[in-house]
Amino acid sequence: MSLSAALTAARERGLDLIEIAPTANPPVAKIIGFDKFRYQQVKEEKKKRHVQKAKELKQVRITPRAAENDLMVKVKRIEEFLAEGHKVEIGLFLRGREKGNKDWGLMKLKEFMKMITTPHQVTLPPKQGGRGFIAQITKK
Image (cartoon, rainbow, N blue to C red; front, top):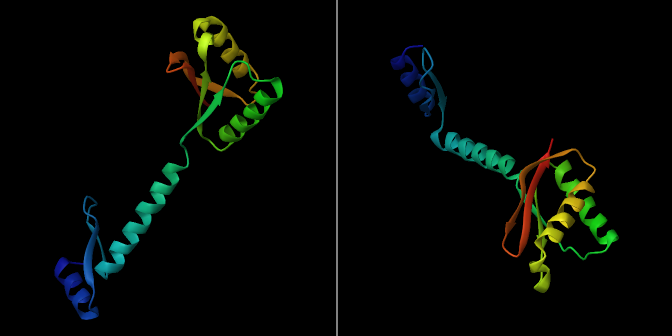
């Protein structure tokens, strides 16, 4: 349909002619009310933002002196996060004199990461940061 014919048809219906795909050959246009079109665009953007937000960074804090059962509870929580598709940041926090024995803290973090049964990959290997060590993992 020619541009003039499309504009005439839009005016007869009391609607607007909106160009949807300007790069297409020929360009694609739609006869629709501009307010309705803008409402649909906002709705689509919100939906896209909601989908993007689904995969975010989750954090789990552990201490090197935590009991075995406490660590298993944290492992279960990490596995839930991984199943949902989130990135997980594991933080091992050292207190007081524990900061002087960093090798021991790093060993405890590596032992904890071995407890995670869900297949995962390490995106950020354990590194010193803040008051202890930080590592990031994602689902394979």
